[in-house]
Every structure is written in structure tokens, then in C-alpha cells.
Image (cartoon, rainbow, N blue to C red):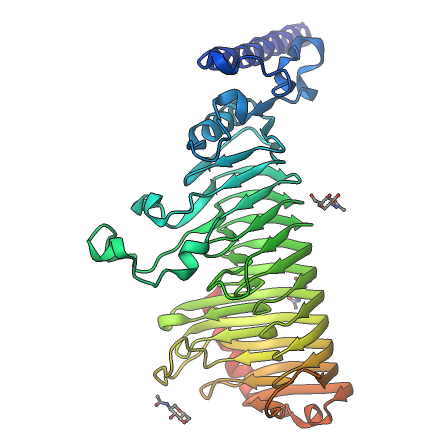
Length: 462
Ligand SMILES: *[C@@H]1O[C@H](CO)[C@@H](O)[C@H](O)[C@H]1NC(C)=O
Ligand SMILES: *[C@@H]1O[C@H](CO)[C@@H](O)[C@H](O)[C@H]1NC(C)=O
Ligand SMILES: *[C@@H]1O[C@H](CO)[C@@H](O)[C@H](O)[C@H]1NC(C)=O
């Protein structure tokens, strides 16, 4: 008896879902008839012409082509509304938002927001372009250009390009002309937009696409978990300021792999609140290398742990692998390993800088973001200035550093003097073959008492 009623209830729910899905598909059509002149477009929007009743509802994938939502793709009209409409439609029923190949869409800053149906796909085969003129950016949305917010399980993929058209931002000084006229508020001096940002999102994959010419950072994950980045290309000119490749902040469980980054700043940057991050098979350069920090600015708390960077290669970068902290911070960096790093013409392949400063001089301060448990293993190749620079805090030294099998030769291209390996206030051990051999004596051994002090700084991180 009971089973029978629940069966018919299930069937009823199934019918409801079918009716709902059908109505969603039909609702796409009236929008199409808004612009009659573009009616004959057999070549796009094929996905949703299929009747959902013809196949089981669970396996149906709906495709929402931006061209079916009024996008003009003429590089002049603002296609953001069409993108938003396609996104909202897909968000409701699940499926795929399509940016078709061989079309270029001008998109102003947009937030593609969830929660949505899971397993959404944004298929980018064409090009999304940001407005090139700084004056066409609204003053309240300079944080980012394309913002994904509160999304669970989304894949962004395709053979297309996200083009931030940042050239005007790179050449503009920190204070814009409009700002002087009072158009921009004083609280956001020199703010420039990140191209693509994921905020408060889980289970996100970004693959195959290109992200180029961002005004600032290209791809940022913030307050997010379960991040996969695979086979993407990031590119902007070497002299474009602050154009980080990938930026992770307050995010956990990320795997970033098989990608190429060319930029004017860090190829990958790991900021406070990050844990359980694996970065591998990344090609970086020109750029500033792969970096943890800057942490602890303005005496802030910073916690970073369980980071693995391996099988990465860099050419013509300022740094190879680096940890940078400001003086006066609080918190801890622990359990980090940089292994199998290939460098070519890199200015300073191994760098720990606890005196990070973006001006000529910064005030000396006591207190530091403590560094403990960092391994550098199998770092090979050529440098143009200094093989190793490990400058730990005067307040609390770095502990448990581990240098294994470091093989760094001066590059043919170096000009001027090469610097010796430098280790300051840093404890740990060196093992295996070392080149230059001065690295053998770089770290101090012992430091058991200091280890205890440094571990006590971990408590602010929980
Ligand atoms: C990587 O992305 C490119 C460009 O989209 C694509 O052609 C290629 O098939 C992708 N490779 C893999 C292994 O997925
Ligand atoms: C160090 O980090 C790695 C990678 O995230 C993790 O597998 C390992 O358990 C961590 N070790 C400790 C002692 O926490
Ligand atoms: C900070 O301390 C260092 C080393 O003790 C010293 O050389 C430097 O002049 C100091 N800097 C400032 C700005 O006080």
C-alpha cells in the first residue's frame, strides 16, 4: 500500500519536472522574436530545440547560446545583458551557457551569481572583451570584470578567449583623471579590475581557455574551495604592471596544473587563508615566478599551510619560487614544498624575504609571520643575479628549512656582479649535491629552542 502511494507520488513529481523543463525551453522563444531581423539563425542555438520529452529528463543538457538572448557580437554594443540572461536561464534549469566561436562579445562588468542548478557549464569558444576605455567602467565595479559568486559546481571551458583589454590601465598612472574630478571615490585610489574572479564558490573548474591582457590580476579565487585549473593560457606583456596570473586567497583544496602564464607580475600568487594547494606542471615567464605572499601587511594575520609546488618551469622571471612577508605581521606559513623547479635566466631562483617592502624604505617592526617547514628540493638551472636569498625576520628566525639537491649555475646572460648565496636567521638542513657549494653552509643547524617559539605562533591560525 505504502509503496504504491510513494510510487505514484514519484511519478507525479517526474511529470512536474517535465512540465517545468518544457516551459523553460519554451520561454527562450519569445525573447528570440524580439529581434526579428536576426530570426534566421539556424547555425546557433541548436541545443535547446530538442524536446526534453524525447529523452529522460536527467540526461538532458540545455544549451543557452548568448546569440539567442540578444547578443549582437559587433564589438560595439554591450552584450552583458544577453550574457546575464543566458546565465540566469541556465542557472534555473542547469545546462550550458554558450559563447559561440568566431564571435567577439563586448561585456561590461558582470556578476554571474548563484546559487544555481549544479553542473553548470560556461562554454567559451568565442571571445569576451572588456571595454577598453577606462571611462566606460562604472566607478562602483572596479574590483573585477567578470565575477562568479556563490556558485557550486561550475565548469568554465572552451577554446575561446577572455580578453581584459588592459592596455589603457597599464599606462595610466595610479590616480586617474576622473578621480581628480571627484568621479571616483577617495577610498579606492588606484583600483584596477581583476579580469575573472570567483568569490565564495565551490567545486569550480576552469580549463582550456585563454585569459589575456587583464588590467590587474587575470584569474582570482577568493573564499572558495575545490578549485581545478587545467590547461589554461594566461598572457599579458612583461611590462604590464601588477598583472598577476592566478591569485588564490582564503581558498582551500586547489589544484592548478598544465598551464602557461606570461605576465608582468607573479605567475601564481598564494595569499593568506590558503591551505591544501597543489600547483604543478606550470610554465611561467616572463613574470615574477610563483609566490606565497606578501603576507602580514599592516600587522595583519596571515596563515598559509600545506602547499606543494612541483614540476614547474620558469624562463626570464625575476624570481623562481618565493615567500614574501611584511615586517610586523602575525601568523604562520608552514608545510610548504617546492620541488622539481626548472629555472632558466631567473634573477633569484630561491627567495624568502621577510622584509618585503613596496617602497624604498619600510619601517622596521618587531613581529613577523613565522615561517617553518619549507622544503626546496631539486631546483635546477641558471640564474642571473643570486642563486639563493633567504632573509628571515630578526624577531623570529625561519625554522625547519630544507635545501636538497640544488643545482644553480650562472646564466650566460648575466650582467654585472653575481651575488653569493645569502641566508639570514634561518635554521634547517642542506643535503645532497649543491651548486654553488656555498649553499652547503647557508642554513644554521640546531635551533630547537627557537622551533618551540615559532610553533607557538601557529595558534592564531586556528
Ligand atoms: C588544451 O586546450 C587547448 C585549447 O583550448 C585544446 O585545443 C587542447 O585539446 C587542450 N588539451 C587537453 C589535453 O585538454
Ligand atoms: C603537508 O602538506 C601536504 C600537502 O597538502 C599534506 O599531504 C601533508 O599531510 C602535510 N603534512 C602535515 C604534517 O600537515
Ligand atoms: C632596520 O634595521 C636594519 C638592520 O638592523 C638597519 O640596517 C636599517 O637601517 C633599519 N631601517 C630603518 C628604516 O630603521
